[in-house]
Length: 375
Ligand code: PMV
Image (tube, rainbow, N blue to C red; front, side, top):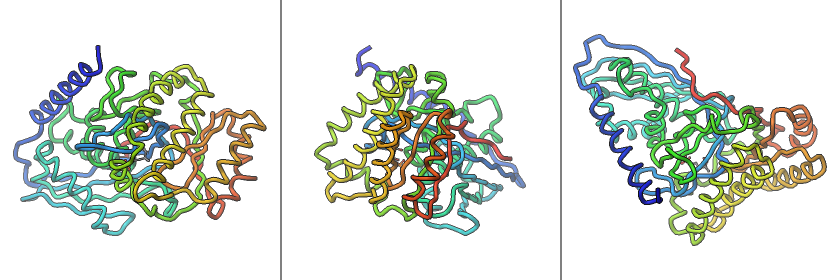
């Protein structure tokens, strides 16, 4: 099938899904006294091929692939009760947080047609992160995916098990609308978000699981997050995506990302670590190069980000241990390596790399199994 046909087919598929969700939405009268609570924990994820640049309604300019993490998570509790109209309050780590709450409330109001039962509910949301304060780790992927899992469950309680509610595809679709990369957090192990001819069933509107198409070595991969700085980023992801619009390198970037997706998918399947390392590090550096080439340009790496990269390169050359790094939109370094190398690499982190970290802080994470229901 040529790419235009695939695109038309994928778009029709999504429209059909949306129509089903609209048909199945709970439109009845919620009984007086109806109340309950749901509680979900969902992980963060780290992209190997990066999503950087978007169009339309949270549609990525290129496909991306990520590891789902295990330890860096958000736990989101939603209390709900029958009300005359939609009500919403949001608390983060015990304190009411109107700024973050406004983002979720806007997402709900924008998508009310899919969740019309919300017009009869008052929600109190309490969210907290398992990773430490000021670790510079973005929490929108974990918090938005946890929130959407809870929302799906409220719907499920109202409409029952005979519908498509509660499917991970639906959760991913709405997590994407809440915060792009959150679309990938709902799947265990690894996820692909964005249409690519290299993978059947891929979509710009939701992520899909790669769990059954990866070599076992990647299912237990380690990610040690080296905290270079715990400060909040000077430029938000939202602003960063927007700056891609005028970036002269954008067309070349999107073409290269597509090429990297194709080659990374093959390497993930075969367990080819050389290609994995090559693409992962190149993607991390490209992300930051794009920031430097934006107008206005900006730099999110810190001196110790570069010191760590040079250390890691030297250590890999010397020991032949297949470790590599990736970077998020910030200064912290994610050190990726196979589980069987964990003893040697952790010894190296404690004795060498920790010196470059803010107060010697690092987080031992690994590939995980996705969201968990807590209540
Ligand atoms: O989901 P957002 O809008 O926070 O963007 C995420 C961007 C990166 O983390 C830099 C890359 C990615 O694919 O997760």
